[in-house]
Image 1 (cartoon, rainbow, N blue to C red):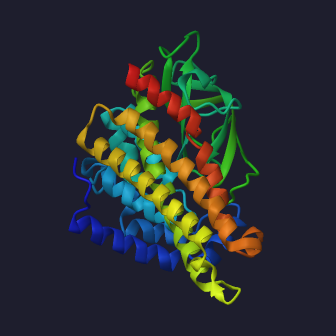
Image 2: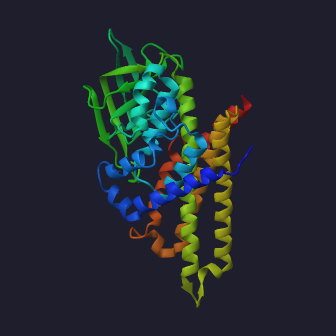
Image 3: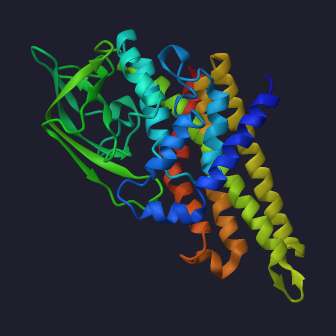
Length: 376
């Protein structure tokens, strides 16, 4: 498998990095954390119109750029490095992926161009109070009516769920059990029976919400009973994208630690010259490079249609989550007392590392899932 990025991909990375370094400094991150929406509409429009990032992984037939998982991984890695506050992962990865995997051709042609163009921000609602990301955790019930469906249930931990302009909800048909009745539904956020409540979370850079559905009208995406396969495909795709985002954040922390170690002087010498600090930085570098290898490998496997991709998605998610948390903790230690303060920026990436660790399932869940898939 080819691991080297092409010249075009390297140029793409440079363009995205320059844009984000200008549009997502930590001063902007801190400002957006305090807002209800959690993102800058002007930057979102520039992200769409100037860079066309919102449609990068959406096929050209549906208004997207038609690139693949590797290019999406590059965009996600740079967003993780810059700690971008935007509904990109929720709309362009999770929701767009769900629609692409579950909807009919007519529905894709109707919905995906608006997401690709940035006109519509969508969110995917999977988890409920149990916090599970598997099909067994879905308790929301879909009841057929004469002209559609009605949903009853409670979704939680919905990324950007309070501000999304369209909701994609996973539910099971009334009277069914197991995976047989699982399906995806499109719900209008302002429809009768839909109540959205922002959640107070540790990581304010990625907003979450709960969604209470009480006989909420919904449109079935695709066919009833086919949601289990589509959900698995969607979450594997999202896990690879998130793994790439996490290694970008880990790299930013490593860079910060190295710079500080070379600047901070104790006992007349830079602390980076002390053997203990050298060892810690070397361990961090090794962790980050190994996690990058797993994330890049998984993205390339998805692009190639590798049958082992589901296992590799879980491997990448688990490896990147572990690395991000270890590097975040080590970076705070290297910074010493100032690393624990609110005024220092390190805690912003630390909190993102913690929220990303459990998003889509924690490392233990994905290691178990990887083993099950390998045995199967």
